[in-house]
Length: 248
Image (cartoon, rainbow, N blue to C red; front, side, top):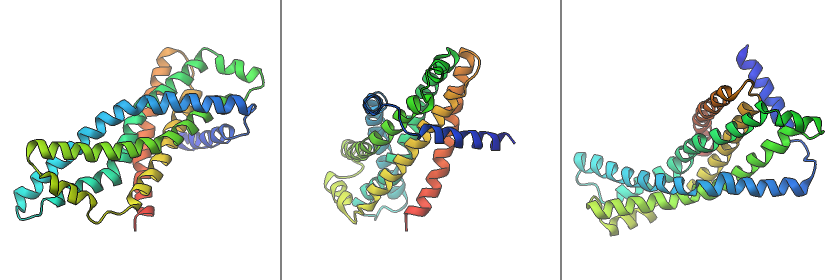
């Protein structure tokens, strides 16, 4: 019954979130603000994580291939790194990181507004509080996350090249050859589509958890934790679904 209750309330919450905004000028301004707050501010952590993911994947791939099949051509290492970064790491893993960073921020911000009765004040003024507070965050991250995903792809592949060249695990010429060998452009589209869906999951679930917070500061912390856990679980569920649907 608890699952059905939350599913129904979440559906009603989403319907309220995607209703017509009261003032479009304020609405678009808030979207830009959220793009900066949720997207631009995440560039640093996305860059750092992507670089080391690419580096580690390259080293581990080289070790596993050469230790078992030393006759494998060197370009295979970067080919595996490229496809791993494009298909999975640049979308799923980065969005799992954003679920912790962005999800906790959104849930705690809206939850604090709920327990301090700021949301009640918006409702009393006739403002659709769910639409006013949550929709700009949803659209802001959905707009920014494709750029973060593309950045993650580029930095991850670059990190793999640096680690391979520095450690000698793969020659630069072989690495570059593997990057362009049998390249499938749809892999980029696949990653972007998944990241947009994940961005919706992160912000909508975090907004839901924060919006229905009750109590005090302790409950705000619990809502923040709940938002991260639930959004991470649903990201992995939809990762499986979208991978099955999008890939031939």
